[in-house]
Image: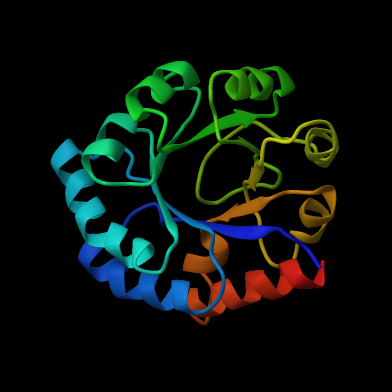
Length: 208
């Protein structure tokens, strides 16, 4: 039995109104711990509109709705938290914007030091990756599964594994102790649709 859970990130490009029913079907297909809204290079109005459309889909199912990059808009939009990366802002600044009541996740790539500093600055979870080549996000970073195993052995702060994760390759990450597997293409590009993608990922997590 594993405690690892699915962390679903929105696809790279989408219309929020069209995505909402697909997201509902995906979330109804099996356990999902969180949904992250990722809208790169979008205006504040576009982000807030997407939040208004998609946030209720997650929150009505008691699933955390996390906004990527923008802690300021996360609070304005009624999100459950925000996730920041190296190019967004520091963890301490993000925590100050979110306050103490909203969740903060921090991308730490392949860096133990960055992850420890994020924890000290108030992160609720850290994310390592990419573990595998990803079609959703260009990155030269390759995190080693040994890093994940070290973190879960030494630290209590929850950890998310991200980057090219599929039902076929996720087992080592689950066995290394990942608390969450963040996926995009494994769900949204599944040949039988997003709901089938969620079922496939959860089956693979359980089998690991």
